[in-house]
Length: 128
Image 1 (cartoon, rainbow, N blue to C red):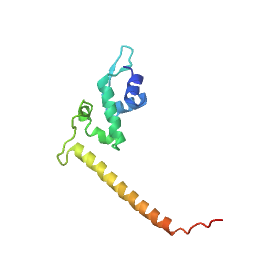
Image 2: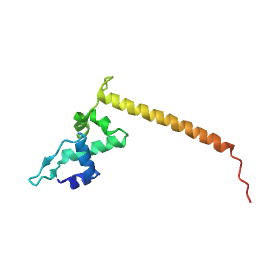
Image 3: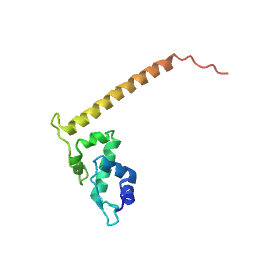
Image 4: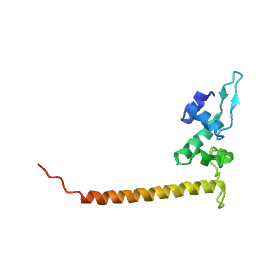
């Protein structure tokens, strides 16, 4: 299928497919005789996985650490693509992301508590 159809099937844009290709997350597709990109169902499934992982907060650079195993997540049913061994690229990426999320949750919790305290100090507005 052509790039527009593949992008629509994956829920993204042709520009995103070209970007994933440029960044090494998606292998360059086969070209038609006229030079147009020709994608198959495996590429569409991989793009869906990429989009899901990006939606979870991983970055393109994070995904590049284990791009050679992304196909495992695109299988039905998905197979684990990570390693649970400390220091492995996948576990390091996930652990970094979890730590960042924990830090952001802690920051937002402190912000919420402060706002609640400050809101409690506000004098009641007079009614007319």
